[in-house]
Length: 251
Image (cartoon, rainbow, N blue to C red):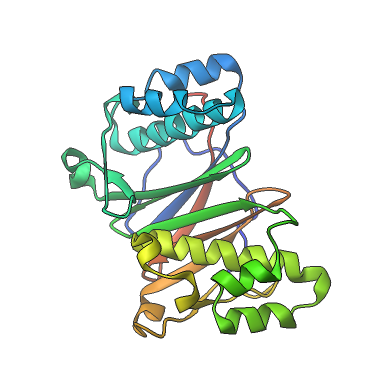
């Protein structure tokens, strides 16, 4: 599967079919008035978390990321964003509280620098990751620590000028898969293999500890914007991807 080429605004009458996965992109650096509007939808606990950030930019980005999540989910559920409540797995994966479970909405989110991505599905586990491409992170020593031996070998085989891109392809695909499974650090990153070569479709190649996992999941590379790499992991096959650009207009 290739990259999603565009991020159009969502339709006025938004629906989410069982064979669809929606991914939303949001820019986190908003005007102060927009940040205040989103802040109003957060719970006291979320506001307390926001106050713990030392720098205003980081605090505002957290507020926007949480507020946009509420706005998006509220749109699917027909619920005021401020009413939404969440629960968390033992490993920290967020889900809607039991009172909203009847709709079968599942989601995952990720953010890096000034961009956030949100994956939403109906009845399918999903995981998403986005990373701002930094030269200091694309280091072979980091790869040797976190990637599988097969992935390290594949990375070394990539032409030097493409190695940084390949590193972040590998990293985001692994993170998306781990987040989709919701098992946190109990699922070591070096215990499964993903594709990473530029131009190669995103794929889960092998899961030695649990071979059937390869057929249970599908991966997709995403293009969130210049300087960013992202990946989506979805339970099952035969689903359609739709991408939307979030805006506070009409949400």
